[in-house]
Amino acid sequence: MKYMRFRFFEIVKVLEVYVMNEHKKARLLADKYEIRMVVFLLALLLIIIGIFVFVHIKFKSLSEDETTYNYHYIFISKSEDSYTANHIYEQAREYGKPRGIYVERLKESLNLSYTNSDYVKMAAAMKADGIFVEASDDEALKDSINETSNEETPIITILTDCPGSRRKSFVELGQYDLGREYGRIIIDITKTRTPKVMVLVDDNADEGTNEIINGIKETLQYEGNHLDVDFIEEEVDGTLNFRFMNKIDDILSSKALQPDIVICMNERDTQMMYQAIKDYSLSPDAQIIGTGITGSLLKAVKDGYFSALVDADASQAGMMCIDSMTNYLKTGNINEHIIVEDTIVTKDNVERYLNEE
Image (cartoon, rainbow, N blue to C red; front, side, top):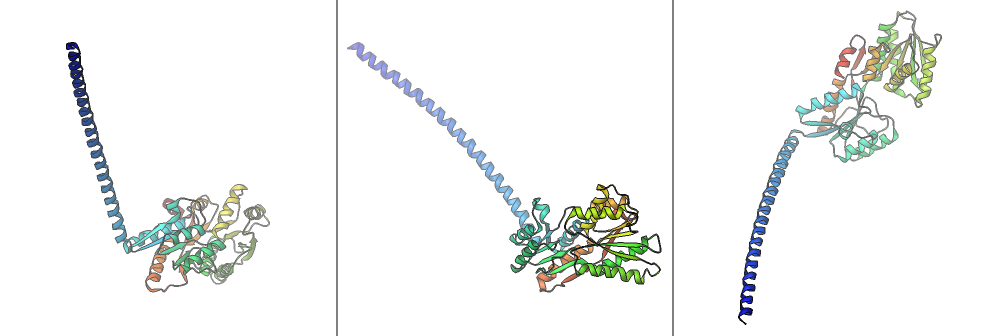
């Protein structure tokens, strides 16, 4: 019985020791848990503080932007390679800043491959105050411009128009004035008193083409009356590139057909002319006058393939875009056609333009 009692107390003592040990372990685990919780909470607090500071700084900068800019205009061009379009945008952006106007180039911001019709819809969805777009006669673009105008977002077309659309204005190099400039260049570069001048006319040419040709003819008549010009209007396919290039190959490869001077009246024809010269390894005797200023065309002037390029004055066009849009938003008044001066690039000044690229 004594032994049984002893064993009982022994078991109790062991249990007490076990319980005490477990209690110590539990306290130790609890302490570790508490320490981990404290560390976790401190880390979480630091993260929250970091997020708060970041959001505060971001919100502050956005607030400053919002107070700085009263108008948000979106600029949409056909190509990122166009010297003139790029410089119109840059001039518009810089001219707009001190006037509380933010000009955003949508293609540059999104870096995606959509049509200008798509970009116009995006700009409208962004609730822009105004849109500048280098347009065309594309029906989808016309529909987008009309839909956007119905939503009371004004659109100004630049460099090329979208005929029949509800755009508010068209900033352009006047067609007749452009023709006069071509005429003056012909007078300056001709090497003979009886030059054969060929103007490439797209088979889908519009009324503007006739204005250009009238400008050329009248300038040659009044300022170049010492010349006996053989003036040829050569119709080319305005839709199929391979037909156009074959036509160029035929014209520039034949001594009998090759004129003294060739005029390309739009940027597309000018680019295709340069492409045909390179692809067919042509060495034309004809002097070529192009329209539009891009990096590749500037190189063509430098290398002697083109005698001159004509395009709109980008600085003046950029300022006119901003002034016209802002005036419309404030007063509701705007000129339907805004004529800008021209820029002429020749071998004498091409380096300056190449350095600005």
